[in-house]
Length: 241
Image (cartoon, rainbow, N blue to C red):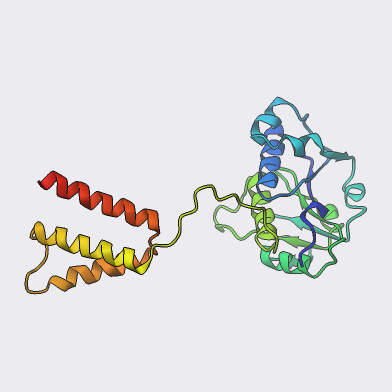
């Protein structure tokens, strides 16, 4: 079982633009992360940050600030640095999914941190050496720079998607799969309409219907979708009459 999301901090070091902090809060909220920590921020959190957060105000309201990375990660058992480039520093490197596998082996009560560096220069080698490992997000080798909020979104998503307990989703308008009888009724209706418009090859009438079957059956039609399609055929028939 992966450790609890509320026990994983997202740490931003030396951030210079409040909009990036707000966008990071929004990305975190999308993935059910709540612990935002700022280390030596170079900008205030004000209207710009809250505007970019798009409603993730609770995360901004509850953020913590530390002067040094050492104090921000003091209670964490596992700390991952992030980097957009390969370093000359020999440090354990992980792919995002390898990071998730590591987190999944830890006790549920453990604490971890994802550390993101400055917009223009990232983390220093000294800061990386405070971490257990370093993760690089695979990107276009000719354009590897990721916006910090985008990087946070990617890593938080990789962790979130592995959670066995996901947020409850309220299905307000449930649409069941169409029954075989409904699908066959649609095919019969469609075939009749095509015949009425002389759109079937009289020598091989089954060829086009076979292709339609392949198309629609691959789509796994639902009850309401069948009704929409039947309604369209009926409207065409009325227009013809």
